Length: 144
Image 1 (cartoon, rainbow, N blue to C red):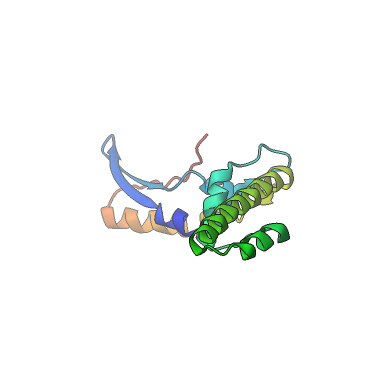
Image 2 (image 1 turned 90 degrees about the vertical axis):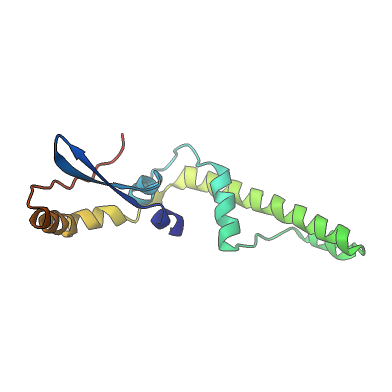
């Protein structure tokens, strides 16, 4: 998710004279990493609507609405009707996606788990410790 990667920030602070490095990102990273179980509360619809729009997904409209759109002669009126129809179709698609995710869940991609287990964190910790001539602890913890 490009918005997730854009949200990543590093912060440096000190705790009792010891350097502390913090990594922060949008809080939905845990859902992407861990996934979502079956029969849970459906996710909110608004982010799914934004996703549909951002990805340029065009939901299908009914044949009846397409016929009505073709029959409208006034270009401005036709444009307004098409936009309204598209918004309703996006809302319907987002609702269907939300219900499906709530019922079926989805598997996480474990992007953070893989980084923790592949040795990169230990290597970073070692390199920073050598550079700063101080013991560094790099911790990766999930919010509760």
